[in-house]
Amino acid sequence: MKDFFIEHAARFDNEVVISYFVLSSIQVREKQQGGQYLSLTLADRTGMLAGTMWDDFAETAATCSDGCYVKAQGRIGKYKGKFQMTVQKMRLAAESEIDKADFQPSTRFDVEEMWAELRGYVSEFANADLKRLVFAFLDDPEIASAYKTAPAAMRLHHAWLGGLLEHVLTLVRVCRATAPFYPEVDPDLLVTGAILHDIGKIRELSWKSSFNYTLEGQVIGHISIAHGMLREKVQAIAPFPEKLRVLVEHMILSHHGKYEFGSPKLPMTPEALLLSALDDLEAKMQAMRNEFAASVAGGKGSGEVTDWVRSLDRPVLNSRAYLKDE
Image (cartoon, rainbow, N blue to C red):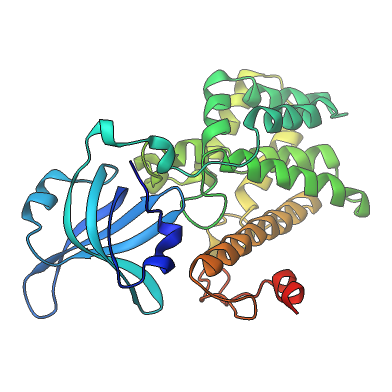
C-alpha cells in the first residue's frame, strides 16, 4: 500500500522512493539530442508530480496509459524550482495493491450536509419560478449524483471530489451575504446563477481514477454545456417566464467576466456583474489556500512568498502565517 505522498516530496529530496501513483498523463517525447523519453504526470490525493523516464521505457509505454495505476521507483529532485521524479522503473499496479482513497482528493466537508444547506437556500426563494427551475436540476437524480461528486476544476481551485458542490455552496453564501448591499440585485436571481453557472462541469470533467476532460468538455466546454442544459430544463418545466430565462442564460454565458477568459458575453446586468466578480474572488481565494499549502509542503518558511502562481500571475504571501510567526 502507499506510504509516500506527493505533498511530502520535500522530505525526500535527492532520495529514491518507491510508491504507487495514478498516471494523469503519459507521453513519448523527442530528446533535443536525439532519441526519445517518457514525460509523465504522476498524481495522488495530495497533488501532482512531473516525472521523466529516460531509459528502458518501451514496455512501460506499451502497457501504461492515462488514468491507470502504477508502481514507480525513482529519485526525487528539483528542476526549475519544482519537485519532480526521475523514474527508473514503472509497471502497472495490481488492483489488490491499490486503495483508491489514496489517489483522489476529496472535500473535507460532509457532502450531504452541504447538499441539504444548498437546497435549503433554494426553498427560501420568494420567486416561485426560479425555485421551480433550480429544483428541476437538483431533483434530477443523475444531475444530483454528479453534482455531489464532481471536482470544480482540473487543478486551479476545488480540484477534488465534491469540489464543485463546495465551491458553489461557498459562492452562494457569499452571494447571500453581499446582495443586501446592492439594492439593484435580485437575490433569488443571483443565487440561481451561482448554483447553475458551473453546472456544465458535471459533463465537462471526468473523475473516475484521475481528473480529466471529457470529449464533450474539450470540444464544447462547460459554459456552452450549461447553456444547453438550461434550455432543456426550461423546456421540460414549461411554461417558464421568457424574461427570467434570458437573465439566467446571461449569467451563465457571462460568468467568466472577460472574452479572453472564455466568456461568450460580458456581464450586462447587476446580477451577472456581481456573480462574475464573486465567482472569480471565491476561486482565487481557494487557489491561494492551495498555494500556501504547497509552499509549506515544499519547505518554504512563513516569511517567503510562494512560487509563481500562473492563475494569479504573481507569487502570493500567507499574511496570517507571516504575522503569527512575528
